Image 1 (cartoon, helix red, strand yellow):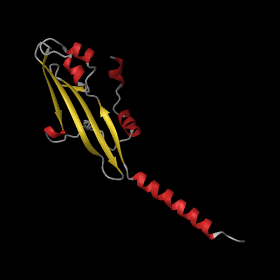
Image 2 (spheres, helix red, strand yellow):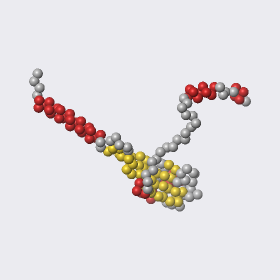
Image 3 (cartoon, helix red, strand yellow):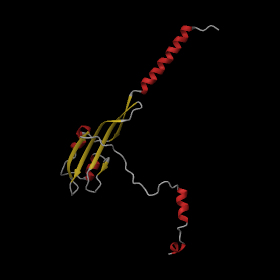
Image 4 (tube, helix red, strand yellow):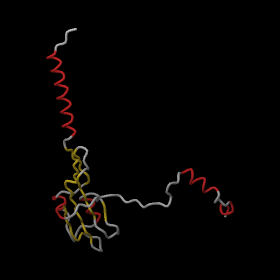
Length: 155
């Protein structure tokens, strides 16, 4: 069987080029955008001292989050995260718009912050730990069988 060596070299070279292209494509950065921040035009429609919580939600949209208390502000947060190969994702930009309200529920101020204004704060959900750890559902169910009192169920 006669094998054409130049053709074999060409196929091998093409396979190496495809492999190299795949490796380089895996190392390119990809970006993800999270959240929503209203544009300057929409923020210009919000008038401090005139607009209320409801009118702000109608004009701009629902906030990403709001203050803990009822009189807390509205917060709109947008982040851009860069993923580069196997390295840890990095926040490239973060923008926050805070709309503050006074005691009567009208807008008292609008502020805009970015990464350049301070330290990057990771946004995470905090979960309250429970006292039920290392117990499966079946173990919890069987553990409560001995505590059942029929007299309390009748009352």
